[in-house]
Length: 188
Ligand code: GRF
Image (cartoon, rainbow, N blue to C red; front, side, top):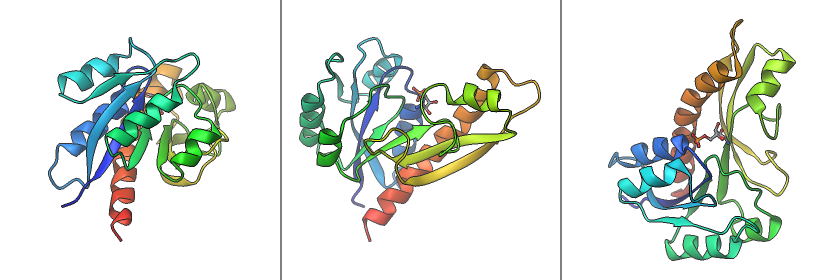
């Protein structure tokens, strides 16, 4: 089976990256990991990726070295770029080179609660249901076409931490589902 190649961009913990890595270990999963890139040399996820034998790269953060990111993605023949807790905004010139090939996971049911601290925004708004969204990345933050979503209840005594943990569990499943969907559709 021909698999699509994933390039993962992380800035820190990398639990969504790990969920994708785990999914890719299944021979029947239609995608494989090609490389992991981070703008933060202290990102915990980098170590995890290295230990798993993944090609990992650190790119300059200020200003973000998008040319280097592009070069690595091309070198590893990446078909789909997955932002997984990547805390920098990718500008239009990079996105136009990777049009329709960059996706992101966000911890809310978009279009609600765009931007930072989405879980806190949901708590403050008093919603009873929130969740996560995998979407295509466009120059306007958290606004591209939605690929997959999962709903998560907000419970009466939730803190930002407890709600974030509950959402994160769903993020891991939702990201894997979205990548699988894109990979299968790309074959047709
Ligand atoms: C996740 O909540 C994701 O939705 C958001 O940043 C967090 C990254 O977590 N974009 P991790 O690095 O994947 O553990």
